[in-house]
Length: 234
Image (cartoon, rainbow, N blue to C red; front, side, top):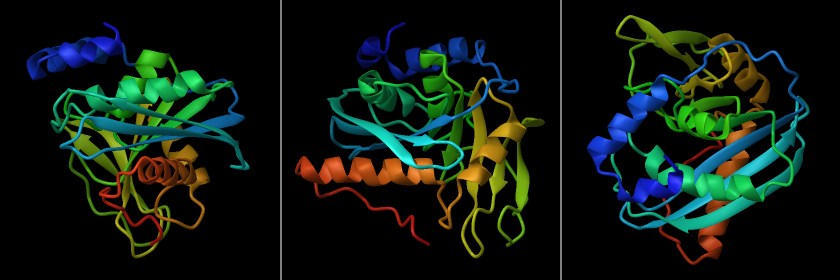
């Protein structure tokens, strides 16, 4: 199935496709070196068809910005929790196709396998592009965990149906944890270590923090001033 076909899917068909994708997920260690990492984010009003996508490229591990791409697209797929990838992936692919160089690893603002059907946005995007990917989410979608300690990089495993699906990571003292899970072609342990190396004093890791700033910028420039700002600077 092509992402251009998502427009015509019913929610039931989208769920069936997630089950197909789930069989292709590869959560194994990434053995190749990482020198370019990408951060991706999406912004939209759930009552609007317009979707804003942004990808920022960084040298790694220095995290110096070396490139970016944006896209504005439309979707008719409804806003449904657990199926947001069907709204988001086509727009992200438009931005992806504009990149003159591709990263060795992508960090996406959302879930990897920490998803009811293990197919969050990071997993979905990683499978479609065959790119190693990590989900770094600001909120929990599914899974249970014990609250991690209140020191930076305290962490706690997340479980669903007896399976470890992610890690709740305290990226900054006195802030809510972030939720890390591998998307595709990278291990759970590597996912957490990469995100820890991308934290630069904010709750949100730098790749998705900068991508968030970028998509909000293009959204405002496009005349949509109704976006809900999320405080990333605590």
